[in-house]
Image (cartoon, rainbow, N blue to C red):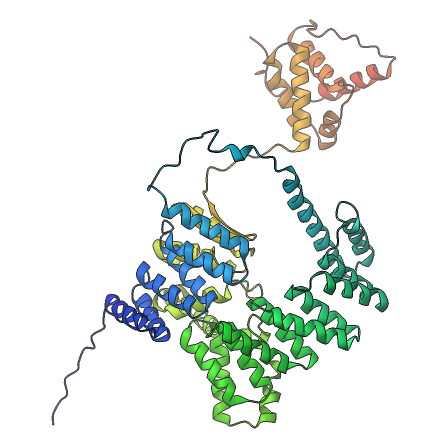
Length: 575
């Protein structure tokens, strides 16, 4: 019997796959190159060349979200790199995050030019444009910010059902200096009247909003939804078609596709998505949404090709993985078009997850967590796809996974934990509580600064410094003012320890009386009591006390209170 020897499989290095990836990229085969770049990045996660090569190819395939994820991962390994900022800036611009794009490009320019040349010194002739007054331009952003704040308050109150408070906020939003026409304000006003049951006024304000912003996809989609609710079918169809023609970003796709599903116009959504794929081939969110449209229409063969394309380009997207598995089940079951339409009714478009979908995505994480936090941490280190799954669901508020981060960091190596936390700071959504947990953990681990964080529509660099001393509260400041007045009356700072001990033995009501003392009763009482105790009747303060006056009665009452609080020791007695 011949025994076949066991052959140890030889795993190629990351550099080998990088060379082959660049070869395919030079031949124009971007999808093949993406697979090889991804494999190289998994073999050597800290390799800037592999990470950035994968990010660049993903961007060439119009997968901006995945490209942004890889660029952020490269930045997490080394915050001194500047090339990831360039890719992030381009991706942010392509996904509609204009301010974040400017911030990222600014970091790139700052890093790429660092040390190449020195900025010229200040010269009046060179910088004479700095003296141009910009007062008219400075006031506009402030007014716009205040108006947006008023609209946010009104929207919040309408959501709560507090229509009277919403009316007050809208009244301010319509007052000077915000009286200029504004589409968002008109839409909110229409929603307010719709909640009141005044359909005529709601329709009128919705028409105003649609007219004010004819080239704004979000306004047109919102107006179309309002028109449908108000039974204005023709106006709704006009706004819907205009929104579909203006759609550019993933958020626009989500709004239009959701509205088309609610109104039974999925053919409009499919036409829009096909048109977008002609402009940006292989766009992952567009392919995903088109697959959902075809599934809801009962066309399994057409849907299968698009979800396979999404899966081939980015294997780390959990929502794509869920739909890919579901489509495979549909193909194995050989469902009829009617049965397929019924099964696909619960599917959502890219960017939205139902509770059942979330349970399926979380199932591997829950299974790993059943083995304890230490086993979960080991899975994060050993399985890159598992780590990507964890990072993808961490921002979801329903998961509440930020409470797991401190325990995980105890079982993870310091370098791995810091890299993971830096990656978390660049996740979207940008204003979630888990980022505060991550930055606190980085500071506690003494991770080297700076920390790059995506926060409030900005990408900022945070340099943790010494903790600022606590600021005094209003009550503390008022009490301190009375202590200073006492020192001035006594003409010596030797009274301060005595006054502090008296204050420490006061009740809260007595401290409030000390803080709110416009007649300065307590400073005089402090001086008189101190002089009586330690100077045998010698009064440094010249203040006549008339027991018959109202002020005199208050001083005597304060002295009686202080007499009941005799000092514990004589350390306050002057030398």
